[in-house]
Image (tube, rainbow, N blue to C red; front, side, top):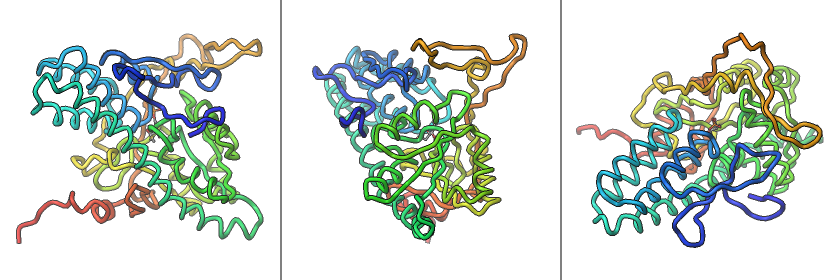
Amino acid sequence: MLVDGKPHRTIWPDEAGVAVEIIDQTRLPHEFVTARLETPEDAAHAIRAMLVRGAPLIGATAAYGMALAMHQDSSDAALDAAATLLLAARPTAVDLRWAVDDLSETLQPAAPGDRFRSAWARAAAIADESAETCRRIGEHGTALIEAAWQGAAKEARPVNVLTHCNAGWLATVDWGTATAPIYAAHDAGIPVHVWVDETRPRNQGAALTCWELANHGVPHTLIVDNAGGHLMQHGKVDLCITGTDRTAANGDVCNKIGTYLKALAAHDNEVPFYVGLPHSTIDWTLDDGFKIQIEERDGAEVTDVQGRTPDGTVTIVRISPDASPAANPAFDVTPARLVTGLVTERGVCPASTEGLLSLYPERRPNRPG
Ligand code: MRU
């Protein structure tokens, strides 16, 4: 997508092919800074400290992390150690496990001398496939926005889409999941306006989604997390689209904390609630979203906020009494019954076991006879 009018991805190999560059998302929206990852430890740190975040981008970074490990040492022991290191970086987004397993399976049968070359090629392919997958999510999701426009156009207004967190191109390699249909609709000339939840505690909506929508020229308005229900009650939201960090095989979705409350409000107000996701986000081993491990993050993310002062300094300030403890569950589970549809690279399906299997029939368990 565009940064200052120029196409950009969130992760890319350096020219020598021995390191990767990323956008340091902890510095946005006030500073555009890139960082260089040279070792698996750099990749694990980037994921853990959220220089990169968002399920598909975590996966692509982990894939490159495995390749960087093979550049240092291509032994079996180094392969296992890199997998263990990267898998421990963050627990909820299943793309991390998906990418590490993919690289491990690719590299285990290879001779150590061939491993770095294979790993680098596979990581690059995962990044390219991820971008293409998101582009296709956009193609399928545009139809939903176009359908909503039929109603909005009669009232001579844009389609109003509400999104939570950042499931935008910054959360992926390119395009985003929730935002891919928005960008595709906008580029096709459909008037779209986006309500962006600020998304406390880390404010991914305010800092990242607003930044990328502004760069692409998509009209949007930042709202506090608690405003969505009110806007839905007053007919100001035509549809919600969010991402997911892990989708259980029954269609339950686990996404940024607060997604569940938006889905409840959407259900109560008969506003369609869609979730955009690539295949890498589906955990076929889980038949129930409530089994997903929810990341608990540092309470300091709740008690403190980062922002820019009028003199341009980016700083962190405390907003609660020093003595007050804070809890910080980073994700919640939205049950499938509250999800109108799952928007994947293969099309849109009901949020259910049968719905997912209709798009991914190769996952259907073989039944005798
Ligand atoms: O904690 P984060 O910023 O990694 O959480 C990201 C989200 O919750 C996204 O909505 C999700 O990863 C979908 S990404 C396309």
